[in-house]
Length: 105
Image 1 (cartoon, rainbow, N blue to C red):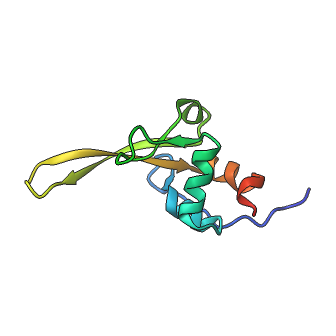
Image 2 (image 1 turned 90 degrees about the vertical axis):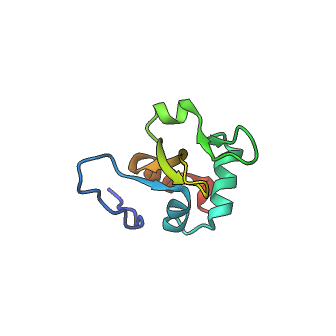
């Protein structure tokens, strides 16, 4: 069996499934974050409902276990705390993307 030299992926010690933001995954894969996000969008892994809204993963990709969504509390200038959705790549998704030809360029 041939062993691949994959980048180091930290292990989450809390017992919760590990997930990483898109820019961190891009850096672990040796890509520019904007380029990686553009590739994910072009290949229909993620999308935006509106230009000013955060990225979301297609449900089919969430079902495959490549992505999860996390809600983060964001405090606004008015003092109001509102949830902000963030798409995150799972360890399974990281391994999937590290093996794809689209990120090996």
